[in-house]
Each structure stands twice: as C-alpha cells, then as structure tokens.
Length: 489
Image (tube, rainbow, N blue to C red; front, side):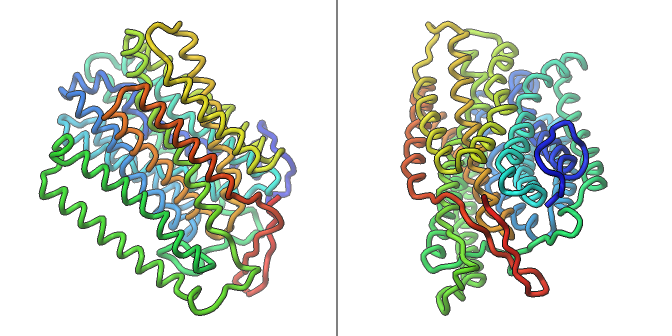
C-alpha cells in the first residue's frame, strides 16, 4: 500500500495520482461507450433508422460487455491493470471511429456491438485501486473511481450535442463521436507511461491458474456454475431480440448458430472450471486459504439491480422525458443527464458510508431506498410538474449509484488475487441487468418498466440477508511461499 495516509483529493502524487488517472481512464471509456444516446435523434435522421433499429443499437451497445468484463477481469489479474487498460483504450478507439463514419444501420450495429468491449474498462481500475489503498479507505477510493469515472456518460450527454452543433451540419455528430475516440487513443499512452500496478515493494498477487475463477469448496463450485447461467441467458435473450422474432438483424439460421455456440461455450466453461477447481472434490482446501463465493453471488444480484438499472435508465430516460412531457430531444437529454450527474457524489458517498458504518448495513438501507425510488418513478405522468419528475429521478439515482459504490466497497475484500475476476463477474451482472431491463422495456410501458426494476431490488434486499460483513484478513501466498495477511476492515 502507498505510505501516504488518508484521501487527499487535491494531491496528485502516490496513490492519489493512481486514483485520479484511474477515474480519468474510466471516464473516457464511459464517454465513448455512451456517445450514442445523446445524439440518437440526429444519428437516426442521418442513417434513416427506425424506432426498432434505435432500440436494437442500444441493446447491442451493452451486449458484448457481459463476456468482455469476465475476459478483462481474467486478463487484469494475470497481466496487471497498467498494460490491460492501455490496450483496451487504444484498441476500442477503432470501433468508435467506425461508428463515427458509419453510413448504414449494419455498420452502426457492428461498431456499437464491438464498442460494448470498452464497457469492461471499469473492472481494471477496481483491481488497480485495491492495490494502492488500505481496506479502511477502499470503499471511498473505489467510490470516487466509480462515481467520477461513471460521470463520463453524463459528460457525453451534456457536451456531445453542443460539440456536434459547433462542427455544424447534419454530419456534426460524426466529429463529436470521433473526438471521444481520439481521447481514448491519447489517454492510453498517458496511462501506460504514468502508472505502476502496485506501490514500490508490494507484491502483485496472480491467480494460481487462468481460464476460470478459483473456488474453495464443493458447494461454491456448483454455485459458481449456477451464477454463470444468467449471463448466458442474457446473451440468448439478445440473440432472440436480434432474430426474426425480434428485429431481424440475424437470419433464423444465424440465430440458431448463435444459440448452439452459447451452449458449446457454456460446456467449455464448465470443463475449464472443473480443470481449475477439480481438486476441491479430492481434498479440502485449508481454512486459511478459503473464501466464500456466496459473497460474490450476493454482490452479483445487487449489481444486477443497481448498475443494470442505471445502464437501462440512462439509455431510455431522454426518450422518456421527451415523450412524457413533450420536450425536444436536446432539452430532454439535458434533463436526463441529471440522473447520471448524481454519480459525482452518490457513488463515493456509498463507498464512504460502507467504510464508516459497515458493508452489509449500508447495502441494506440503499437497496430499500432503490426499490422505493423506482416505485416513485413508475408513478410519473405528464401531469406531474417537470421539476418534481426530475427531482424524483435524481433521488432515485442517489440510491442506485450509492448502492453501486457500496457493492464495490465489498468486492476487493473477498480475495485479492481474484479481485479482477470477481469485479468482472459482478460487473457483468450489471450488464445482464441492463439487457433484461431493456428487453422488458421493448414489451411494456414506462411505468411497468420502473416497477419491474423495483421488484428486482426487493429480491436483491432478500438476497443481501445472506451476505456476511467482511472481517479479519485475506490470506495470499507470495511466490517465495511466504504468507501475507491483508486486512479487510
């Protein structure tokens, strides 16, 4: 850990320099990932998109992020956040430029699908920040990282329409989108030349084996496989949405190939999980080296409801305000950005509350608030004063994002060497939530959509009762065989 004590936001040295550069990298990934939503109406006019095609692009935008977060989590644990973040920022600028200069729905669809990969960047910084901050500051530090970085979506919503107008003409949006790609490419170099994976003298613990998450008991082995099913379910749901039963982007034959591919991929994952964890059936893992995968499962469900709903709501809120109150899309997008704007304080607030009052208690209160917040949003109609509707969205947003901060205040305290993979899986569940919620949105009205999210938050609250407050220490073994105890409170 960095020797400097406390979180000094105006400092740009040691661990604070790493924290600031981490949230900046995350900020850029979100600005790139969400550069479509605020420009949706002009993009639709230029490319001649139908309402159905717009919704398809929104779905594609979050599709690849589900497997990407798992893959990026594994790569981060193996190769370190310095290299992996730099490569992600550089490589993902390519589909960003592809989208900026797309001239058909098919080209836009492919680039939005590939851009889903940049949404995995979040996972990398979670591991990086956990290497530099002690447990008693970790919730706040991860909250700042998540909240300030997440603000990239609000910054895109507020600035990109104006930038597009400055470039002028019907094609102004193309330059605004391309600008986010340039930022991504430039920052990959800044990141790589300015950070290290750990403070000087610290050990970067890596998984014993790659290819699957390690578990430490028979029960956890089966729970791990069970928790993989919703991720494949979400990808199958996306395939169905893109098939002739949905928007016909895929032919029936292509959809069948995709379904078969998902089944084969799952079987391959089961085989890999057995390869990495088969030893738990032959001998018990010593108590000192165990961790409870149940903790991961609970956090997955909570992130489904928190970040999943945020992703879905950020995508649909401009349209919701425009249609409910008869506003122009530019004004509606500005109002909707207040939802994501809350991230600046809410997510660090959730992390700080966790550091101060405990992980479980904070999550219980925030999840209850989340359910009530979405219930209130389900009641919004055109007869409401606009200011009250915006205030309700902002209040709901506080619980959503503070909940996200509280989830990731707990994630790095489960097993250090697996932090990237745990963050990847929990993060992927956020995207599973987004896919499920956005699919629900295509079938029901706005009020029912918000009620569905509120119901899943109640499920999250019940699941949370099975979580244990992190206490004591994590055990990791250095390469020389010596044991290191890492405090988790």
